[in-house]
Length: 129
Image (tube, rainbow, N blue to C red; front, top):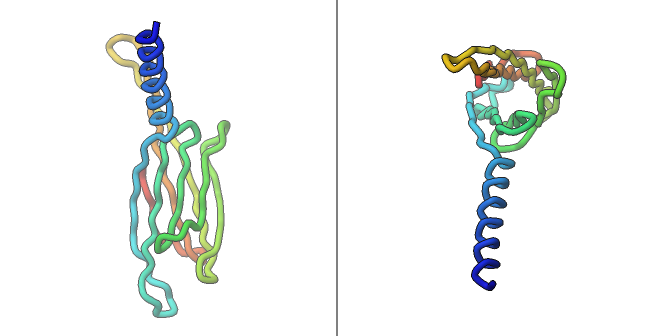
């Protein structure tokens, strides 16, 4: 009886671990440099995509989170803004989905994302995920 409880505990542990791994998802990151017009040192602008149910995107400048946004369940874009060192920062996101049918007849959907970051209405860069 005791060995059965240990076995059940091990399976519960593995299932819990897999669920946490799935919930945490994976992330990918892209970055670029922005040169402020006031002659200040360049800023590292980083956009991270955290995979998950809502596909969260995080915009950081020099390691400081400025904007966090997710796509709505219904809709294919978002528009969020924030500030960094007195400058207006804006992040726009666009999603496109394509469907393909495999040889086995199963339909597979693929999402592509483009994130645009603006500082004081100047396009800094486009990030494709």
